Image 1 (cartoon, rainbow, N blue to C red):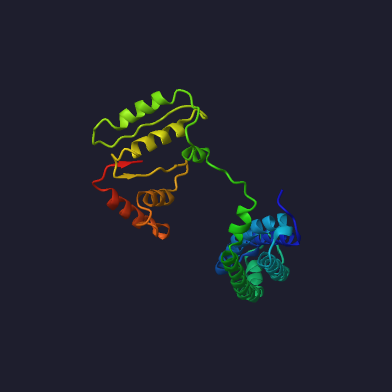
Image 2: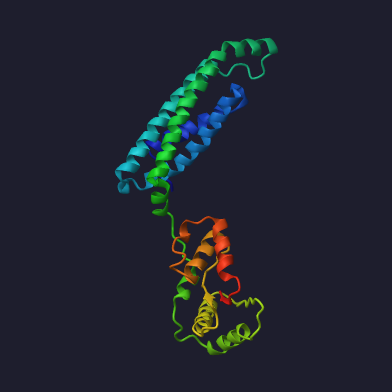
Length: 272
């Protein structure tokens, strides 16, 4: 369960008032409405982090505590501003007649412009705390510490030696023959079966056997999940093809990764 503290409680109250302020009842200036929508989104993201910090109170360092306290004080200031604005405007008749509505708009025009100025100042403070959160890497530090780590079970098989696996020789010879039939065409050989049968281990043993024979100029072994991260995949391939030549590839963008991968693989026999 997410932690509840003074900071998260204040933030929950504030977000409720921001939602109410965006209703047609308050007839905000267009520019103010956009600023309020920005505050609602940004403060909503901050609330998520505040809840994580509340769950880890005893583990927080000085930077995290300082950020939490500033955001709490900021939420109080924003809520005070909104309360004053709501009081000055009042809810009024939900369906006023034209003359009455026009008179009310003129009467509250100064208040609407006044809140526009205040909201801009508060938005600047929210952006400052958002940038500070990124600079301190608070999301990264305190999200990774609380989020359960999911490990792809195939990773262990990639580095596992074959020991005691039943009937492995036959499938290994069959797969090797399919891949080494002398054809120059690109080949894809799927290994299909239920979980736990040793498919990844079998693939790795075939990969090691073929790779050690010197028949391929390049080889790489990568694990691909259902949610493909193409940038990471290309970086893994380049790092394995030539670790020294591509040691700087971790900072490359997609276009450069694709270009370099095409260049190094052109005209070469490869094993993946």
